[in-house]
Image 1 (cartoon, helix red, strand yellow):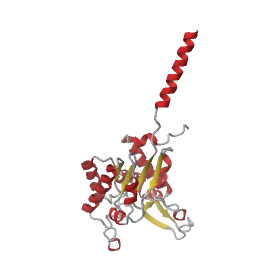
Image 2 (cartoon, one colour; image 1 turned 180 degrees about the horizontal axis):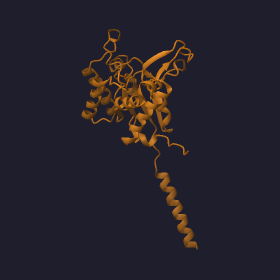
Image 3 (cartoon, one colour; image 1 turned 90 degrees about the horizontal axis):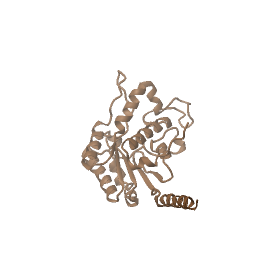
Image 4 (cartoon, one colour; image 1 turned 90 degrees about the vertical axis):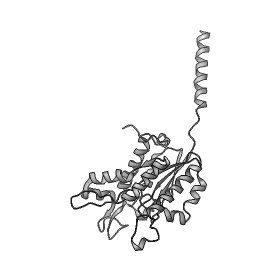
Length: 256
């Protein structure tokens, strides 16, 4: 009897010791850099949301999401306005930088000349983000620019970022950087919903439908709360399918 008791006691000690040796995951930060389709918005802009807003809700307590995306910014202005340098200076080993630009880089209209970035410069700027992120032993994640809502007369959803999305994928291959093709994934969602129901993904309101937009709004670029959550789920699904370490920090769904 004494021998059995001693064995059981020793087994308990070994189990306890094994748990005590398991180091809990380090706390990390996930930085989001990009444009208005990612950014955080004040309640006065509701129901408009960037996908970075719901994205932050899906992680456990070891992750702090720092949404540094800003409306109207291209890779060029994100750098020239000094928005990148504080992030680069703050990065720690194990942090992530999710980078999604393109909407403003490709804006060639005269009124957007201050933000327009030709593809060669766009590539150079993304390489700077990647190089500086990796130099801190942090993890860069490239994201192709999320789709706009644009259909042709037959109801086919049209690609609106082809040149810039291709540049992102080429840089990903050249630098062995993970890439999430959100352009393609979001376009598939828009196509599946069709011209009428895809409107629910975007900030589209009739006059009088919401007090923040008394005159209504027809926005084919920025997302509704519903649309932002759909886009965030696309990004999260890719984090899981690519088996990024960050996937282990996504909250487990509660059983139904």
